[in-house]
Length: 161
Ligand code: PNS
Image (cartoon, rainbow, N blue to C red):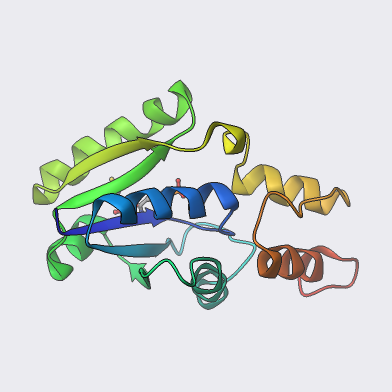
C-alpha cells in the first residue's frame, strides 16, 4: 500500500496520536499527518503551532506533517492519497467517525481505515489533556515532552492563552 493521510485537529498532538501514526507507517510506505484548520473552531494552539508540535512529536517516524485548510477529501486527491487512517479508542469514536468516512468517500472516493491503538493510551484525548493541564495535573505521560512544555506555557496564569 502506498500513501495514507492521518488527519486531525492535533490541538495538541498526544501520545495516542503518535501511536496511531507509528502504526499507520507500519502499513503504508508514506504517511502524511494532516493538521486540519477550521476557521469556525476555537483552538488552544494556532495552526503553525499545531504543525510544529506535531513535527517534533513524530520526529524519527519517517512521516510528513502538513497543514490542511479546506476539505480533507480535496487534500487527499491533491496528494494522491487513497486512504485516510483514523484511530478508534472505542465505540463512541466509531459513531463519530463513520459519517465522516462515508462523506469523504462520497466526495472523493477515498477510503478510511480504522486502527485500534495501544490500549494503555485509550483514555487520552486532546480535550482531556488540556483540561487536566489547565487544572495543574500531570500530563507528562500523556503527551510528548515538547507538547507538555507548550501546554504548561500556554495555560499558566498570565501565559500566552
Ligand atoms: O481530531 P479531530 O478534530 O477529531 O479531527 C476531525 C477532522 C479534522 C479530521 C475533520 O474535522 C476534518 O476532516 N476536517 C477537515 C474539513 C473537512 O474535510 N470536513 C468534512 C469532513 S467529512
